[in-house]
Length: 211
Image (cartoon, rainbow, N blue to C red; front, side, top):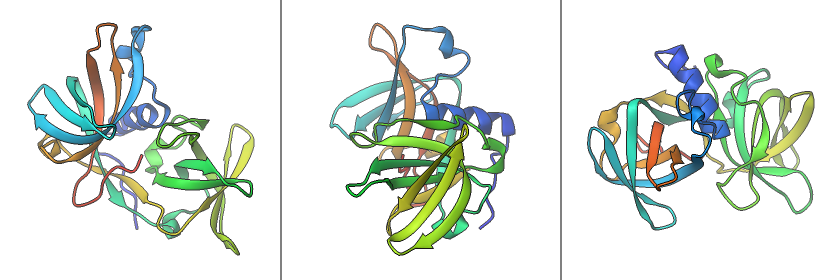
């Protein structure tokens, strides 16, 4: 599988940093009072400037689309596509016997290498973390597949159980933001409760964002 960067490297880099760290865009980062949040759910209604999204928690919220917002999709990949030197984002949970087990894996296109590097709390599941790092080694061991990654001089080994979603980014457009589509939205909520999104990851061709 050949990983394809977005048509615009600048858009791709901005998307990767914001998605995987929860950081606001350069324009919205000036609002220090905005609450950063990540929405996961399906689109109920859509227009040129607004989405109505039913979240996984069961709430229905209105999301304003910021001027110039970006849209991305995801496409299936596999553990076999992960090579030493690749840059990945892995959501994981601590394992009972020690170490971490992956919940999902995102293989970044080369243009996004280094975006949001580090390991930090994530809200895919309680106590989960997101690790954005370079693959130091990819092996198959007795207990299943594991990937060793490095970031900021640290090293972490994460097991990837069979059935774990492994994806990479794919092109998408606003036309894909239609009722029923599954979305992952890093957004911000202002003091008045209004939610705005600068970028959206949408499920296409039967592949949904696993983040």
